Image (tube, rainbow, N blue to C red):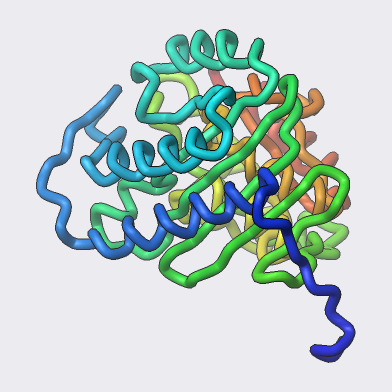
Length: 287
């Protein structure tokens, strides 16, 4: 396909998608400009679960921009919720009753950001009555903007994204993330890694759930799974994968919705193979 054959992806200035793009781009540039200047670190649930003033500042920036355009919309942001799975579930349940709900992760990959490892992103999604209709993920390090609208496809910098074509696990490059919960999810994740590594080409762990999902959508990863996530980690990315032709479920194969905490996202072709291997590994470990 040459440059002239590409369908330009244009959004109107007042659309939900345009606002999401504007928020992600502005917050992303600000986050990047603060790189290396983080002085205050605090922890949430564990020493691995960190938050910085940049996370909080970026979320405030995004909230103000959204409410300027849509003052009646609800916002669910990571930094506005108490730590822990139960608090996240409660906040989501309360927010899902709203007609329009923006779901924000201002810095997905805070640990990477703090260490200067350039794999972090801004994730913004909009749900209408519980269904995600817009998903935007911005990677400031590479200046890559991933955009999806329900029923209209997914794009990176205006070019349509499509999932990869690997049909066998043995040809596949997967990604995962290591859970903060060391008692249940981490041992399970290790058992799954042990089962999958001999059967796939390789496994990566980049440290940003949103970017892993964007990479599945763009065909750079064949699949991705992770345990113990929240809606703000995966809402935008799940829509990107679906609109790029891929499959998104929980790790037991149930359809994706905003309450999913254990996610499996693939090109669709290897989905059942991934689920079967995860199930096999889970049965051999202590849940």
